[in-house]
Image (cartoon, rainbow, N blue to C red):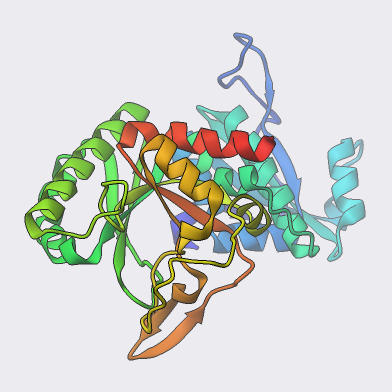
Length: 331
């Protein structure tokens, strides 16, 4: 785990201070800068680089030290006592955070600890808001995904470094689409500042729309281009089925080829939403999910997994459209 750049100690010898004068609502106020986690959680965090991501996004350093039964100090705090009582291997791991945004880092790490613990215990929490929070990145850093039509992919690849160069302050990368049909490609965008993200989304959308226009790419009935849009958020499978309830009529034009996105023409909500907001809703079809290598599917999809919702619309409307979805779910 070299990328995690952490100080791993065998036991607690000289732990850093248990409080930090980090950014706080009250100037000069002390913030708790440590927490305890179980060994399986620690292993999961290292494998998934959660600690490294936290260090990078919150600009902190994390010391990871092991505490065993024989190392238990006299007068231990309640948090340590609870952690040791729950330990299955006779030890716990202490995370000590120091740096600029300690409070934010600790809060995020505690959420990840709870999430991983639930997963290890077989407790699955699939609320749409939590799924979206997990996807959108640590500390609320701007992140999104953009789908682009296959018909302009070669042009976009040729122009990629030029396009990327104009997205100041934004990391733009290709991401595996996990699509059997390969009818679309996917870009990921991450930034430190929302302003930079907004400008990058607008620029990329304009440039790729120009390429779509030049090549005569197919359009959605609303007028936007097929397979072109930005990620709005993530719905649990239960919320997706509830919101986009299908009549079973479909488009009436079955195809022998795999369709990349769900046919939402038989969803009253989707039709009404698209017409009212002049946008398209794009959701990858379960049948299309999976990675293909040498004409063999090597990564089948989970039909009950979360569903990402993309919108074909001007970039400034994406957050608004996702807000409408959340409001409808709340109703």
